[in-house]
Image (cartoon, rainbow, N blue to C red; front, side, top):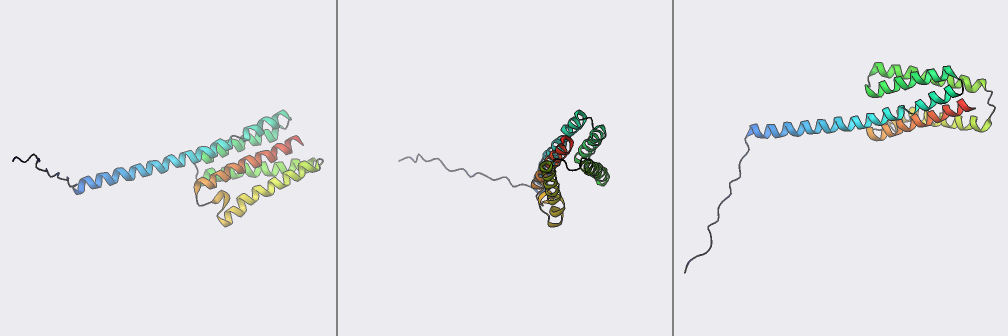
Length: 174
């Protein structure tokens, strides 16, 4: 009787030498770094995009013939886009100067209008408090704009751009 069974062949597993293992690890590290950079780019793009909402304030202030406010919003838009494109201490200071100028001029305009529209004034005050809550309280508690998860923090920061833009629109049209 003949045996129809074929003999089993042993498959040799190729052992990786140290050099191959090192190359694979380096490739994995490069992929991880590229993935982090891609995520940071997307997150920065969100902040750059939300900074562009201030263009609506430029247009609104210009339509209402408030050329100083319009110019300050041009400055803020530029500084905000620069900061969110290349964040460092210098661009941060530049952005803070733009923010300071807009806030102080907005308060000046609101004061000059003698709070004629009580509803608008109340909404503006609430939005101002909300903005400060997200930013200042968030800074001290590491929440909202300063959440340890960069994605969450930047979503709140984008929301901050929208809320402050809305408040300044109300000041302009008052």
